[in-house]
Image 1: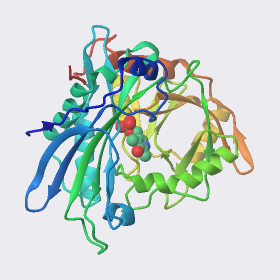
Image 2: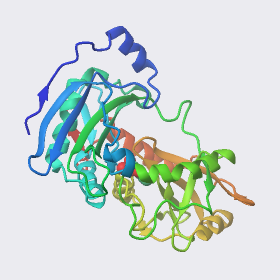
Image 3: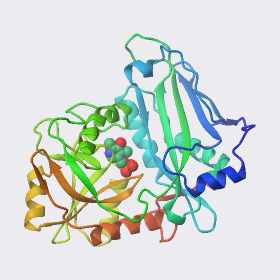
Image 4: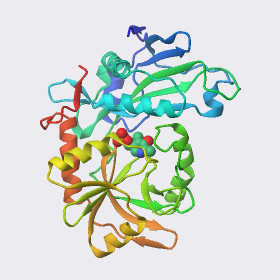
Length: 358
Ligand SMILES: *Cc1c(COP(=O)(O)O)cnc(C)c1O
């Protein structure tokens, strides 16, 4: 794929960049450039370009604003000790976006084109990839949306794919701390045949009210149960879940309506290599409550690209609560460091997960 570049005439100064990278936060500052590719049925993907970062001008009738035909991805670029820059399993993000796009009736962007698009933007904006101190990285957000100006209800005939990037600081400032979870019994995030397995903004829109409910009860995140029976654990609004048992087994929920995280999938392989038996199966909310109470479940954690691995503290619901299985348990922290060490090039990449960009 041919990608043209229009360099920014107004890049952030070195002084300002040092300031930003010193305390990047999350999703607040954006690199000097963005990447964009257009699609129409006649031309297919065309006009791939990197251009100065800036606002988009959209017709008020742009389809995505009305019918939410949109998908996105989340990934990171990591700077290794020697200055080189790497991404983690980018083909997995690319392949997942193809699956999400299929569900949202958006065109597929081929895996190599997706990977190339991300690589080229990171290369152009490589000075924005922070040093690895404090687990800093460059968060990358590829996304695709219905850009046709048309109010009829059908798949858009003009689609835009974009990549933007934003430096990210450590998710946990002051050390890894367990998060308390709220069990919502009113809201679900997905139903049978719905969009639960697609990475699309609509799933996030529908999770916000439950997230508000969680905050209102002093919790950090919300746990969703299956839509059909309200019995099986699905996932959090943007993270998958893991349960560690007293015999060393590790269990993660299996469901057609969860978003299968790349972190989740990587942990299945990694934990296996570390000697744990890993099971993907249905888990009921009662198994969680009873397991923690009886001591059979000894650790619980959530996982996703942004936070990598987060220990889970208490589970609360209307009228009850079970305490933390364990404060940041040993298995949780061992899996977390094993993964982070591969990402930052401090451990051997035995699975061939890392992809060199610079
Ligand atoms: C992105 C996402 C995850 C985590 O996926 P990773 O590939 O591990 O970052 C989990 N759940 C939902 C709903 C998501 O959108």
